[in-house]
Image 1: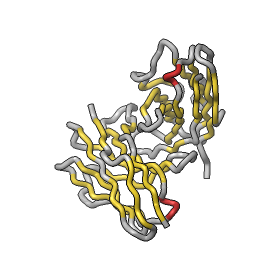
Image 2: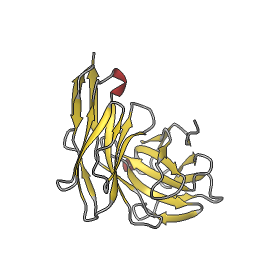
Image 3: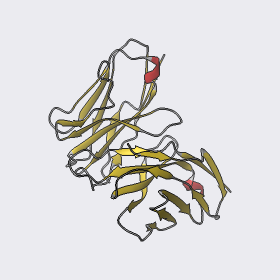
Image 4: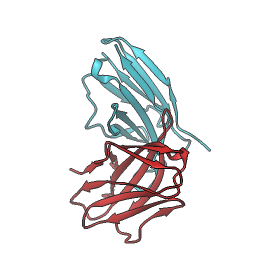
Length: 117
Length: 114
């Protein structure tokens, strides 16, 4: 079974600085998707960035980028020029690409990011 | 932008009582998911629907939980009887299809069992 591990329960960063959130996963599959989701306090979970395992190029979305190391099964999120609105819980998630209708997201335990002015 | 609607936003119930949550996915989304998120943990899938059919309910405690999506649109998740350990956030999500489509989450229902 696949597992996702986030070893940093909490992180903090100063506004305008850069922070990296860590995620490792375990799978025997060769193709899959990886995601970072953001969950602000009392608000809905939203997708930050997505990576297809077959793509070597790291995904980037504006100030958010990932460092995908397939051999090491590592998928870290880098937030550049941090803003106060980035404060939230961040979840790393894994999704199989095995066909059929079963494609659940498997989440890590989350990292709470605090942003200080 | 269309959103996944969930109600109620908060629910407090006594143990052994019945409780129900409702979810209305984004129009046109065939796949609907119910996740449970215990405080301090990541969400875990309870049940996944493709249209009106259940495709994964392996983690649903079937002795007390039930879920339905009768017309393949909105869905209800029920707990009877509720236990103290059921206190959690219940998240609904939908996607256009399975596999490659992104999931869109609702705001969730926070359940407290006393």
